[in-house]
Length: 136
Length: 136
DNA sequence: CTGTGTGCAAACTCTTTGCATAAGT
DNA sequence: ACTTATGCAAAGAGTTTGCACACAG
Image 1 (spheres, protein in one colour):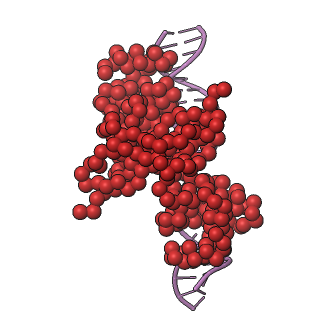
Image 2 (cartoon, helix red, strand yellow):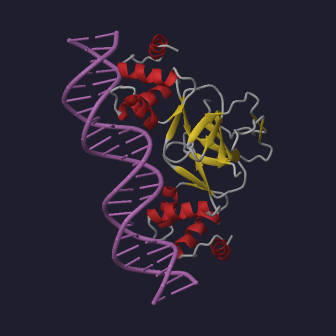
Image 3 (tube, chains in turn brown, yellow, green, purple):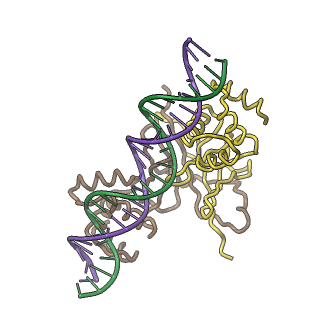
């Protein structure tokens, strides 16, 4: 994914391709699937020489999420992770390191799900497999 | 579950059965399975005439969770839910109302889960089925 | 030019902590 | 008495918002 495609991505989503959005998009979408917090992205952006404020990081991540370019994953209390893989998939969460990873399996499925209550429909199913360090 | 059993529950967990812990325990454990935030419990406690501070609510919920009397569920960004049902089960989350519910099904299961990465073992599997209001 | 986006700081929400007082054993 | 809990207020993390300035179309 190059800068061109990102510009198109943004336009398609109705966002103006500003300097910051292009650069953040590049960091997010040009390095495979990523799971990142606002804070991590902020550090990474500054390190890459991009003059961007934390507020803009948040605004941008939220806009990307609304536009369906990102998916937000809640793992615990405070911080949110943003996942660049928006397709249907599930996660491992390494509790000791606070690291989120995709579960690499197409076979994983849920069975026996009852019909949702009246007047509601299933929006999304989130699965988080919490991993602990194994005692050796 | 009566006040007696709660006192025992607390002692067994190595906690002194103080006024606040007993009363909060009563609110939590004497009304079936509950999914409640610290804030909600605070309001409920004050309404019930219990003089308790929000800090104590948090301390108590965290202690109960550590002792295995409660289970913490992360659904989105900021607030944490505490679930009085500590057995293995999954949740519906009504996004519009911010309401968490147990999924009433023993048949629900996950299949095709790959072996976790080396050096780790599965601690817990959280499943949240997010429900939207159905368009009629 | 016109309107949207950005930076900064301040506000806000949820949660934790420090310290003096109160309560449990 | 001795020790642990509690209340309060203040601090802390993560996130959002308001407003003036800057940039894209």
